Structures are given as structure tokens and as C-alpha cells.
Image (tube, rainbow, N blue to C red; front, top):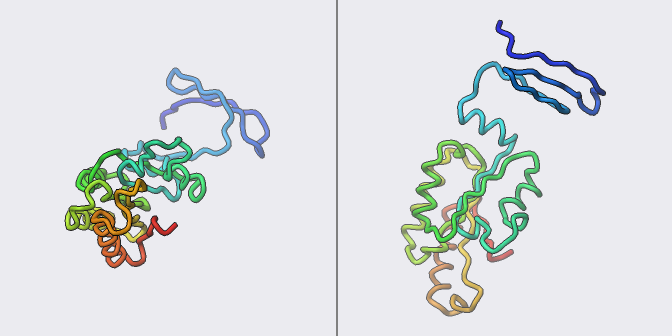
Length: 193
């Protein structure tokens, strides 16, 4: 076979190996704790899966997922990664202001993360379009091809405009009740936490 590079090694193998690689005119010098030798070049999907770790999660949603107004460490996808999936990637697919239609369009257009465990938080920005929100979430779930997903409930505004007795809260509760019925084992009522 063709030689792609040479290496010189020293160090304590129990804590890592100090290695110098000369590869294609470039040099890498550093400590290597673990290495995986791959037989061939990887395509985009294989590269993403390798980098994503053993249990990657894709979070799709609007500004609530994106974390608008919060610190990077306070955004729920980052908190989820740190608390439950520290060795894996957690993709933050939140875009502020998006409706369930736009979230669905982005999720269905992404060929790389459909095999990942998925969190869907859609409908806040168009909850009055009841049938649309339900069909958009159903399309995202159907696109996954697995049962490792959770659908989060739609929240009402905390400023009182969608409080008890308002049309807004009535519409949100109706939507959430239907989502709970559609996904009894994959639905989380965020409002109850």
C-alpha cells in the first residue's frame, strides 16, 4: 500500500501518547488518547454520525428551542446534552419566529439527522392553525422512521394575554390534548413541569 505519513511516538500509554505525525507535508504534534483507523474516506452522513457520538439528539423548533434570550448554557438542547448525552452531539435546530410549517420544512429537508433521537417543539407561533400544526408534527414524526422522539407541548404566554378563560389558552389546551392523544408514549407536557 501507499504510505500516507510517518509517526514518532513517546509517552505513557495509560494517560495518552505524545505523537508527531508527518502527513502530506503537514505536521500534527500532540497527545492522542484514542484513535480510530477508518478503511476509506467517509461520506457526509458517515462523518456526521462518527462525530455525533453514540446517542445523538436533534432538537427541532422555534425560538424556545433556539434559546432566544437565554445564555448558551441555559438553552435546553445544551442542557440536555450536558445532563443526559455528554458524549454525543445535540443539534439545536431552533429558529426564532418560525411556524410549524417552517420547522417541518427544515426537518424534512435535513437528510443527516433523521436517524437521531428527536425532540419536536413546534406550533407556538401558529397554534391557532390547529390542523396545520398537527399535520406538520405528524410529517416530522413519519419522516423519522423510528420511535425515539418526544413531542413537547405548546406553551402559553406568561404575560396574561393567554391566561385562564382566554381564546388563546383554549386553543393551546385543545392542541396539547390532541398531541397527547396522538403520541401517548412520546409526548411531554412542558407546562406541567
